[in-house]
Amino acid sequence: MPEGRPATVLCADIGGSNTRLALAESRPAGLDLIARQSYANAEADGLAELLRRFLSGNAAPTAACLAVAGPTDGTRVELTNLAWAIDAGHLSDEFGFPIRLINDFEAVAWGLDTLDAAQLVTLQAGQPLPHAPRLALGPGTGLGVAHSVWLGDRYGPLPGEGGHVAFAPADIEQVTLLDFLQAKFGRVSAERILSGPGIADLYAFCRTASGRPVKRQREAAEVTRAALDGGDPVAGWAMRLFVRILGQTAGDLALITGARGGVYLAGGIPPRILPLLEEGEFLAGFRGKGRFSEAMRSVPVHVVADPDIGLKGAALAAYSMPSRSTR
Image: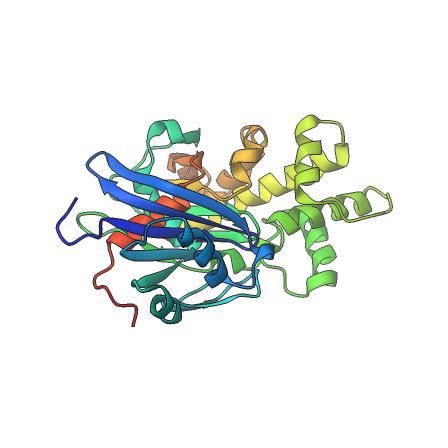
């Protein structure tokens, strides 16, 4: 373990629906998550309550990094899809160790360095360039996006809110989808489609477009399950649209960031719909960039199969803290 690093750190992956907590130790062979627990956010009034529960049964860490689903300056955050405000300074005062906040997909970008080949499913091998920028994105409760650049000795993650870029329809069907969603939301971001709630809205759109009444709003898990089973053609249509638009958006962001180091699909949804991602609609959307269509074939694209990537990335970020103060 490098000199000066804390022996044990607390890492967290805090999404819109669930919070995952773990303790991590840095060993010569890599990170070791020595304790972990998942909580439904609806079970608590705030993060401090969940930390009390977790730490009551575990040894106190010497530092912490909390990955949160929302923009943060490192000390405060108001989560995008959850009515929680988190203040690292207040938490540090209560629990007695320094705490850093990072965006949840910044944590994924950190965590890419913990992956091996067995934890990746390759959709397109491409021709990766050493030390080129890398892009991480993924739909879950929202749409997370981060990229990272080479700093000379390691990759440095650059968080952002790329999930909130405007949805750019690529054909007449998608223009009709945009009209449908604008009637409900006004401005339509990529996240309005590429998320769990977005899948539910896609199903409602497809059902309406097929001339069938929308009797109830279907949950994302129900729609994806029906599409994978092949028993509901409307669910299949909705998920083909979802996968195509995910490919389009990933390709657009890859062009913006120059992600010749690879595009990595993470988050809660991609591993669950892997058969749909492998069918071809995703890569058709990803590569469909006009004059740059051929160039997009050189960009590696992988699905991250490690559910702990956010926790591991938060742990690496905790070990990178330049000081032991949150203020």
